[in-house]
Length: 205
Image (cartoon, rainbow, N blue to C red; front, top):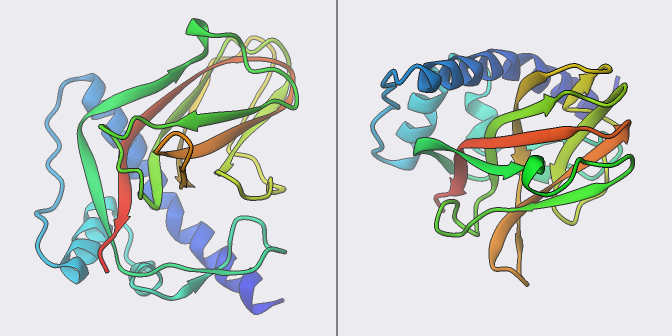
C-alpha cells in the first residue's frame, strides 16, 4: 500500500464524523436551532476548536499542515497550510437547477460563489448537495475548479429519488469572475439539484 493511499484512507475515515456533524448542523438550521461554532482566537486554536466542535480529532495534525493526497490518488499530493473555518450566519442556497435546467449527463457545471458571501481566496467550502427527483440512475462528483475530474463520486441516486449528502470540496478563484468556484459533474441520467453552503475554509498564513 502506498504512503499516499494509506494517508488518504486515514483521512477518509476521519472525515466521516465531520460529515455526520455537518448533516446535524443542516438539520438544526432547518429547525431554527442556534448552533454556536467555536470562538475564533489564533489560527492553531481555531483548528483545534473546530475539529473538536465537528467531532474530529485524528485530523488535527493533517489540518495543521501535513501533506495530504488529493481525491484523485494518482494526482500529485497537495500541501494544506494553516487554515481557519468560517461559518455563514445562515446556510445559503447557491444553486437551484429549477431556475435554470436539470444537470445533463456528462455535464460539468461550474458553481461560481458570490464574493460577498464566500471569499474569492477560499481554500474550500462545505455544505449539502441535494438530488431532486432524479430522471434515472446516476451520480454526481464535486471537485476543484480547473483540476482534473477524479474517479470518485459525492452522491449516487436512482430513478425518481430525492436524496442529500454533505460535502467538502476544494475551491479555486475563477479570476474571470473574481469568485471562488468548484465543479459538479454528472454521471448517468439527468437530475435537478440544490447546492447549499454552510461555510468555508481560508488560509491564515
